[in-house]
Image (cartoon, rainbow, N blue to C red; front, top):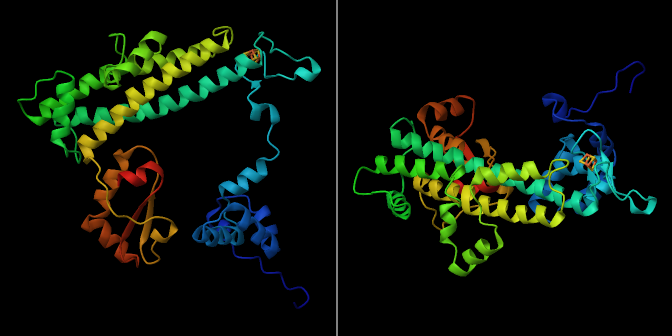
Amino acid sequence: MPDGAKKQKPQLIGDRIETCELDRAKMALMNPKVINEKIQERTIDELAKKMIETCLKEGIETVWDRAEIQEPHCKWCVTGVSCARCTMGPCRIMPDINRERGVCGADADLIVARNLLDTLATGAASHSDHGREIVETLLLVGRGESSGYVITDPEKLMAIAEEYNIPIDRETTEVAHDLALAFLEEFGTIKGEIELCRRAPDATYEIWRETGILPRSVDREIVESMHRIQMGVGAHYANILVQGLRTALADGWGGSMMATEVSDILFGTPVPCESQINLGVLKEDHVNIALHGHNPMLSEMIVQAAESDEILTLAKHYGASGINLVGLCCTGNEL
Ligand code: SF4
């Protein structure tokens, strides 16, 4: 290099799109052996290996990089014996130096149980609110106020309506309206239990009833979980764990089940079909859109938009042959 010449900076994708911290990737760039070791550690999938190699060489941060940067993890958090539930903490349980209880008196069992219930309630809220949004869409269809969404499986609509004693000898939109209201009522019902739990085998249902874990409504169990994990409320780990079972049932037999049923009504009941998987689904000459998430409401609209003349013309105007939609996680199976 001539004296005074400025060294050329490597052209990295990360520089252009400013997505990530590149220092670690730049280090890897200088050492192909490290890159190869990381590829072997991170996957056994031959396609993924190529993608990981590209990411490492171009400084595109991935989940593996972030996991490495986080190490070493806090060992109290990993074992569940840390708590930051109130402003007297955070507290960590360390029996070997006589830290047996948090400031409020919670011991390791209670702290672990509360942390677990927190996680369960968060998951139940996430799934169930996804269900609520789909049911609200069904209500809009029933009211004739939705654009783009229709009843795709009327037979399923009628079958579930009968389960709820809703008259079915009328327009499908009227039935959809009443079923949506019945489902929405399950989120805060005062009947004492979620109707869909009756679908369980009699013996199973009886066990739930006898042990007192029949969910009273979807929202009630999630709210009660958040209540019980607060400082000074739930005081016995076993009691906290029983609430975890009740909350899990509220999700599985309430919010999540409604999400599944109404997805079938709106988008069609799935049937086995041939498909393609893995990174090979990406197309070099197309605009690739990866639809990610657990709620199909937006994805379905993107499928419709991607087939429209306007969007296809736009893609071709910019040099692409078309639009290629690919799915990630559960939404991938909904497309
Ligand atoms: S709830 Fe108890 S254990 Fe948790 S941070 Fe507060 S005082 Fe500490």
